[in-house]
Each structure stands twice: as structure tokens, then as C-alpha cells.
Length: 145
Image 1: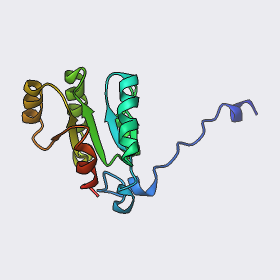
Image 2 (image 1 turned 90 degrees about the vertical axis):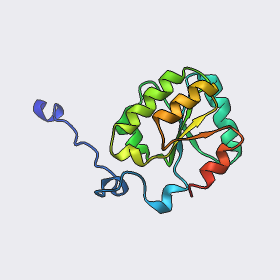
Image 3 (image 1 turned 60 degrees about the horizontal axis):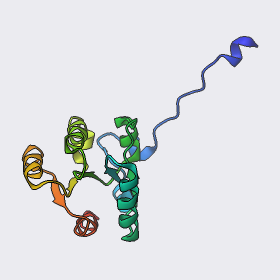
């Protein structure tokens, strides 16, 4: 009886939409409802910015310092928006981490605002990424489908 209480519970299995081989993100039908991953380094400002996006009908999940790439994969965001308003080097590090994995390269990257000089360097480093402002971001995300 004592050994039964020490037994581990089985690990939860991946959902079918993520378990399909070659499918790095959610199924296309669910893509429009998938959240975006919003990366910003000041919690109160991040909540304010995602509130503005929510008013435009955009659901956003906030980046946490403890967030693992496996959790991002399970979240299956339809895009990743990295704010360059604060600590742009941290934002570039997140983009590097995402670009280092084959499955995450399919997630569109958007850099929000930022110092023009640092923005130019960032876009040069991540040529597939796009720049957006808080005004243009809802339109760019809507174009993703």
C-alpha cells in the first residue's frame, strides 16, 4: 500500500493539434482565436498595452520571466509581439530564443515601438520580423487571419 501512494501519476499527453507531426502551431481554423504572446518588461505597462489590444479584439498572453519554450509551444500563439519600449536587449534575447527552435520560426514576430536606432539593428538581425506601433498592430495582426 505504501508503494502505491509513491507511484507517479502519468504525464498528460499533448493535444492532437500539437501532436501532429510537422504542425508547429495550432490548426488553421483555431489560429484566429489563438492568443498573441506579448513580451514587455514592465508589468503594469504590459497590462495597460494588452488592455488596449483587447479593446481591438486581440487576445494576448503576457510573457513571464519563468515561461518556458515548451509552454509557448503548448500555447501556440498566432504571433509574438515584443515591445522595445523597455529593455530592448531582453526583447532581442526572447526573439533569439524563439528563432532558435524550428517550431517557433513559424510564429510571426512583431517588434513594437522602440528607439529608431535600436529598432534598425533589431530588424536587421531578424529580417522576417515586422515593426509595428500600437496603432498599426491590430491591422497587421488581423492580416494574419
